[in-house]
Image 1 (cartoon, helix red, strand yellow):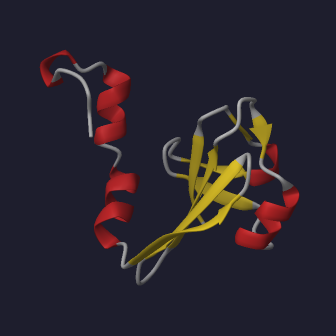
Image 2 (cartoon, one colour):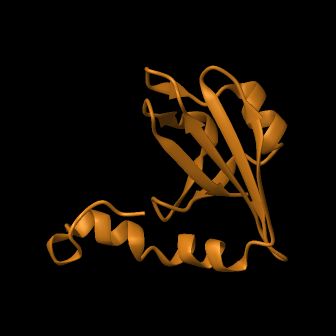
Length: 107
């Protein structure tokens, strides 16, 4: 859902709507669900026939590092993952998720 006028869309918002990696994920998912929730985090996972995805949603009021226990539990040993919104490989333990922000990754 978008609450703006499409002819007036800015470049950043357009880039979110046209992100090929996110669109590919969306079109190929055959499984998706929330797998965890506490006072600060919601964790979602999705799978296609070939890929696994995880999203970390910071629902708290402060910017937060992804807790090691959540990273280990839902990502496992992989230290480098693909940030779909950023279109780059990242080290998960170096990421801070803004308050009310999200990080969408491919394992």
